[in-house]
Length: 72
Image 1 (spheres, rainbow, N blue to C red):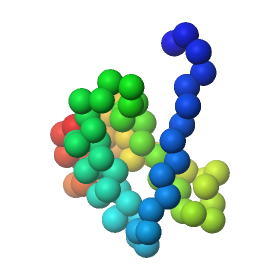
Image 2 (image 1 turned 60 degrees about the vertical axis):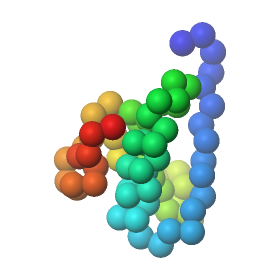
Image 3 (image 1 turned 180 degrees about the horizontal axis):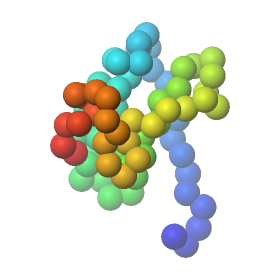
Image 4 (image 1 turned 90 degrees about the vertical axis):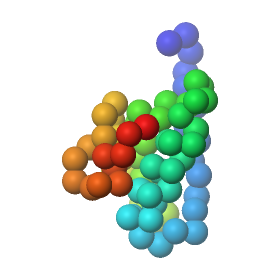
């Protein structure tokens, strides 16, 4: 890496973590060809606790949800 990386925060109108995970999966699949995106590390947080994030992926899908186990 040659310099600092920038993080995009994308608020949604979704009201459940499951729906947010589903959107993350859809975005990873549809944007997988964009080389400037690091889709291997997608995190989610509630609007009121943005510093408390949980990972959907960290290099590989994390276990626990069929949505998370879809191929990129």
